[in-house]
Length: 428
Image 1 (cartoon, rainbow, N blue to C red):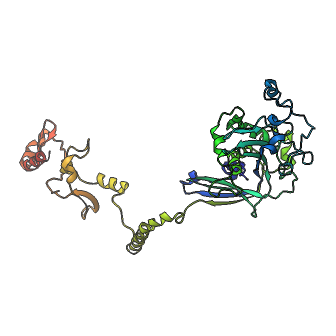
Image 2 (spheres, rainbow, N blue to C red):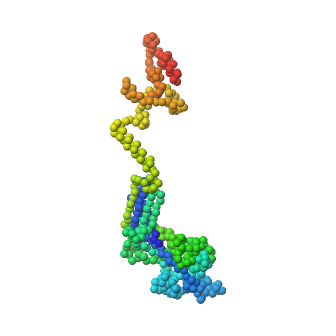
Image 3 (tube, rainbow, N blue to C red):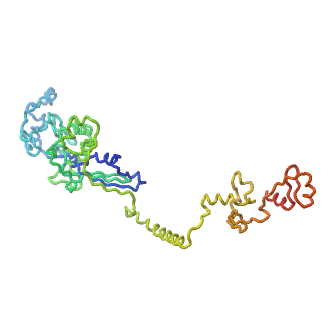
């Protein structure tokens, strides 16, 4: 099972690549990356074995083991012959590539697990695989080997949008990573150390004490009971591959995009991070000019009439030229300053209009005498609009002003004619 290279995720968000993210475009942006880089892969091989076939690989079945001797169990794993011994032959040497011919020793488990339990073997020197021994409910034994390598015929595909991102490995296409490096396809010896911690953290080794781990129980139920696989359930090999896929993703964080010796040299690995180029196909969407999902077609019911109305407005303006919109703030402000005082809004200059003052109808009128526009209420009359003029008088002209009908000054304030004064009090 091949997994994508997680370094593509970091490269897509690095500012040096100048890829607009979906959140930078109000959720409308999307991008697709198909990178020509190697993909990590895990190989899981499982085989159903009988108890006699497992005897060379189970310490409790060796002739040296004595069940009535407690000290015998404590000799494991020291009693196992050390390298370069290749141990005894098994019936599955060619299947799992055991023996001197393949340069790999078979595992040795301490005991056979009881039903619904599993045991993990990670002992030995220079190991490149881990082995899991699981017992099914009907006491069928399943031996699985797990290894990791680089898949040279795959590429990493990353598709990101506002709703989320999807990353997967695509194999066998024209963007596949094809490198002549001889290490492509070679089993990684370092991954076995990572897989050991993974297996122990999932309690896959609790069968050594018959602890009945829940994960081991689920895996045991996937062991086929017939020579053919169940089409409605995953196989136990597929389940182990999916469970261990996270280790492949974590192993490629900040890892090189090529397997050449230039980037695997120890002197470079201990230096600061370095940028590395790789071939990729990038497709971006900076805006949306149409529907991307079927349910979005319903918006065309609204967009169609809206376009028609805008077209009518454009035709009208093209024929009638432009008009002044008096509701714009700057136009309304100028009209308010150049208009006469209205009694409908008395005492509203400080706190604003209240109550019935909101029900007043206002009109924009053109004054032919002064040739300017002003705002007037519907009930405005000539006696409501006036501008009092303060007259400064002296004693010599007082008699003349009283005789001519002008308002004499009383206490420094002008006094208006009776009809206008009454109108003012009614307005106040």
